[in-house]
Image (cartoon, rainbow over all chains, first blue to last red; front, side, top):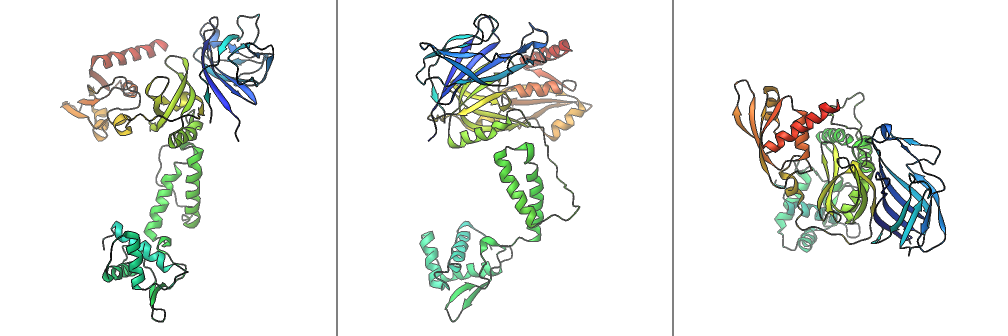
Length: 133
Length: 334
């Protein structure tokens, strides 16, 4: 029997980093996958660059545990960088974390809580989940 | 002899009786009974006799079945025990046509179709070419467009399955125009190709409307375990009959009048842009004033822009100014 997979569409933007969007959270018994969309901007020369800190983690609101980052897709781990070619580029990337409980109601995703330019998202609601085939 | 549907079914019934090893040598009564049982009506002896004669002798029908009558067994049989009308050999003409068809079919392999279809196409090509190998050195004489692979094409099989099995799909869509990502929840109705690009059309729960999405802007589609919704108003023929392209800019058809120079005029006359195209005026030097009546689309605007040195839109004014704005934008970026 296939293990259960639930998809939560999310509409979450960082006020400080308007060009990064947290789009979806998938919960299953193996891992938690979080998808992001990023659009490069003219604020940086030729769109700038991105990477993700390997120490990024997910915290389930109401639990003390931190859920570690396991894998990143389409984005390199720091100090490596993905440099954009133009300010018109865009990127869809995914981060895989340890599996969080199915009954989680909301989560935080923290790359570096002390840095405003990091990918930090707080109180991401997990509502209206849909079961994946 | 006319090859009507009922006769073709009788041939199959007779063929199946003649190949039935548990009840060999069927006689005329048994053949008539078999036809009556399966078709639910009586057939005369002469009908079945004519059928047997046609199966044996009619060249147009092409069976040339080796049917014999055994006096000792008082029944019919195939002289060649392996014969069946479903295994009739191909004529030279059939083989030529089949090889020409494989040329056409081969253009639908590689980057032109998904792995799902490619495997089927490949099987057909291999089996046909193994059996009826082309003469050595014979060159292909048909060549179709073979465009570079479109981004997102790897999702074609998933969308095909979603439409066929009626499974809703969730994906992230990136809008080039708005530079924005959106979560989309779609009930897929149709996969449509337009000018070598694939589009997915269905009811979007996100937008609460029928929407079209370019497959190149679709990210990470996932099949969902959820009930499928079929919009009773959706009709793929009606949806696209009055539009050039896939992305409508208006809801209703509009009369669009445009002038083309003599060179482009030749092409427009040899292949109209749309079925509704009419010539309003023939210019002295071959230039034409044309009219089409359709739902304005993004693809139509793009096509007009592409031909802008040879084409001028006269009506409606909003299309004319949209084209001018787009062209000014390109010049600014240069």
